[in-house]
Length: 286
Image (cartoon, rainbow, N blue to C red; front, side, top):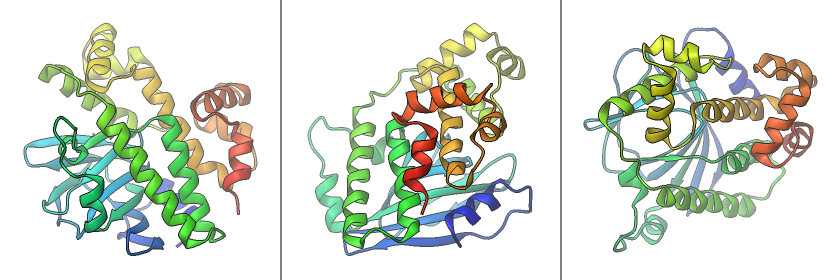
């Protein structure tokens, strides 16, 4: 199934479909797949993978549980999955998740993530924040890898570059010291944002969570590291990157994503990625 078909089915209001996988590159070092999988209201156990994995979420969201820890995972986060532990996923509203999954061979994983004194192991942190620059990088990778016009050796090199960049971002992000209540409200806010196609105003978001806007702003910033408004904007830019390859009308896309105009959309997209929406579309189209 093509990337566009996967993304289309992801957005369609249809019953949850079985998991599907599209292999983008397979070498002795890495296996890169484009995966669409369903989430449900049930707590579903995911068996340990054969290799260590980094999941780059392209669209959708789910609640990921490892042991006693539970987190909402959306396109603004990187997920580091061990090869020796089962995890669980669910979401209150059943939806499909589209992600780029990079599986790293054991020998390479031992070199990349060899324990070092004082170093942060991303597989202990489990979740890292994806910057807009990295998001643009792996969204473009998924698009041009699917097009089939790039040699496998270059795809492998770029995949390893993504692994390195994700590791550096996870290791460089200091853990946020938060009280439990702040973390809980931040996770609930992320869940509401993930289920909305449009941007939710701060006052409305605080009302739904039954807290003051001031408290929510402080709790979210302390727990996640960035303001709630910027977090939502980053989610919308990610949605735009998924839809741009198949979009011919940028103004219609901008309004669909909740931007006030084409110029507002272009300004926000360029501020996040460094290029305009039309230029990004040129780069990722076959």
